[in-house]
Amino acid sequence: MRVSFYSHAWIRTTGLAARLVAVALLVGASTGLAQEDAVLTNGREEYRIYCASCHGEQGRGNGPMADILTVVPADLTQLRRKNGGEFPFWRVYKIIDGRDIVRGHGARNMPVWGAEFLREEGGGYLDEDRVIGRILALVYYLQSIQEQ
View: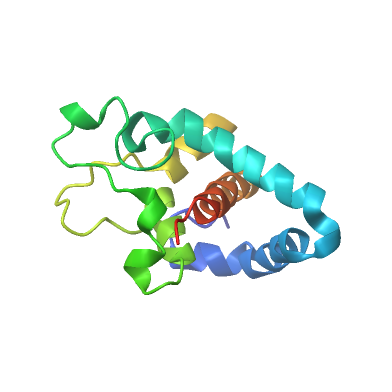
């Protein structure tokens, strides 16, 4: 039985924890510098295509579309600082994939990229794994641009 991409059961049934451990080992291991570079490069490209028009090239909320939006895009370089010095990895993940709504926005203004990525990948069960990878790369990239 296929579990919805947006259900909490989906996380348990797809073995997300195992994938995340594997990604963490690849990204965190000193011998995994090539993998870390690949993840960050992919995340940077996803950011450039899907986020920079609103959040700006450097993530400061000053993209070319920012002036015409009714809600000012967040400065994505300040997420760690605004969260007591810890990058809110899973909160960011859930906002990007559409599970969490950004407080204060009322109706969701930011596109639900999880659904968009799944549509782009074809929408099949195995495509969900690629969507997870795309979102994780984007979150790791955002983590890498945090200012002190």
